[in-house]
Image 1 (cartoon, rainbow over the protein chains, first blue to last red):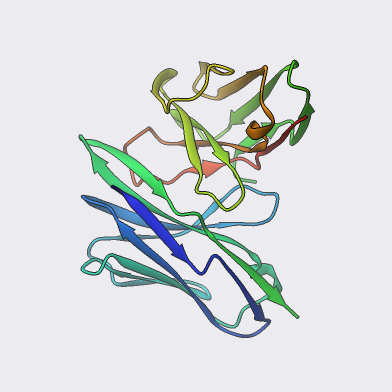
Image 2 (cartoon, rainbow over the protein chains, first blue to last red):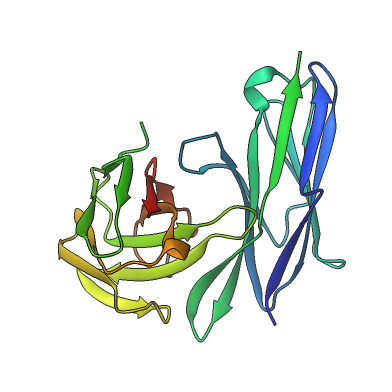
Length: 114
Length: 115
């Protein structure tokens, strides 16, 4: 069964600290993996996309990694800011009968405190 | 601004009411989606429209009725809802369903409360 599991479910850190969010998936065949950021009361916005051949990709203070062998991805946030408080959703795209489907994780809720 | 606008942002309705959610995208996309987001659960795909044609109905109860008059507009008609239908309803669009990189552009959502 295609599944995406995210951990931790929630996380509290102090401003300026780093943190890492995890995404494990049991999806086949894999097409790509995307991280979304969802601010409270807003819709999700794409942060980065990882394809099979990519191991790491950065977007400002956000760095995503992908290990296609172990089917794991991480999102590392450096020098956190209050505006990083949000839910982070991992979405894996799977090829299904020639039609790509999206499998969503439940998200990690991050709170950055001053 | 993501280019996808949803109205209303908040809606409270009784179980016997009939209401509609509206979504409009200004991105020139050909696919539009309705998702349901409940606390601590993954987004649940409800409906997919590709070039105005419904391509997916994810076993959604008939009390939810979608309408897609053109590629830019999507509605979700609601009637005789249950309290467990209370959730955030997200509209999204993409270049086309199943193609491209799969990036979805979401609206801000409509927070629905059923009393």
